[in-house]
Length: 373
Image 1 (cartoon, rainbow, N blue to C red):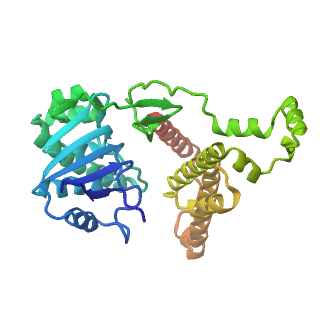
Image 2: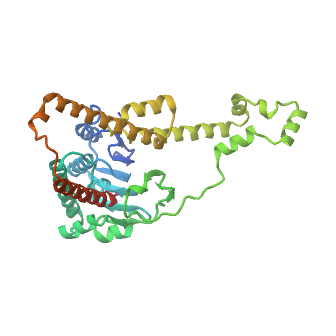
Image 3: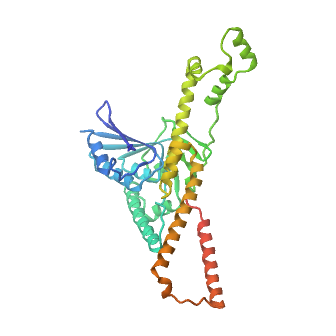
């Protein structure tokens, strides 16, 4: 498993922790990445007087983030947090560990209520809601310690998914200093925000601010490659006169030799595209029926995450239907139907059942219609 942090000791004998990307992109509780390992890595830096945390993250695992916060707060070194782009969700809690929190102009901080996905019966959902309330209380306590704001003020900020510029964060006490020297770049490519070089899914937030659209520069690497491989007739004739091979006879090796920079850039573009595809596939892995479908997409078909999502839904539907049929078969084998009344409901009873079912369906439609980031 890959660590989601990077630590090093600088030349001036200080520590530096870099957190760029999702907090706990891989399971925090896996065999190779544990809270204890993070603590061990930090203290392996030895005696340091100062630790600089370079932070650019949309958040992630709330328990991982709270642990990072606690370990940094307990360390005897002075901790300086630099928000080098975005500190959202649990990443904003990590930022609160700083004795000094610096936000360059153009950086963003966001706080909101914890949220999760769950399934189960009513008691399961109520239990999940209680857990989220407890987590929220823990987050509010952290924010109170840093900002000095009252609990009701912070609850209101979390309820409304509050986005703060560097100046607003300083004003509210979430940061101590607005830095003018470092330039933070931010733009939007479709539904993806690119903040200081880091891509983030902007569509998951309900109140995300508008960012300038990405400027498309004439650096289409793959387009340039195609242009060279498909040279116009006039150019082909010129090559023919010089005794060079025709463009249609050009091999990949020949292209790499004649245009090494373009070839290298094209290969890198392909690597980046495949990396993004694999990452998108991994994000679908939580669904029970996903493992086989994702493995096939990774190593056999090469299809996109969007196409795989459809296949996963089909597989999940089939799995649920099979489980339901199995339960029905088990109940029939048990003979339980012999213990139940055999007479069907009367007309009035059937109508009452139909009305209740219809009302329940309408209620579910209203619930499903609500959008939650």
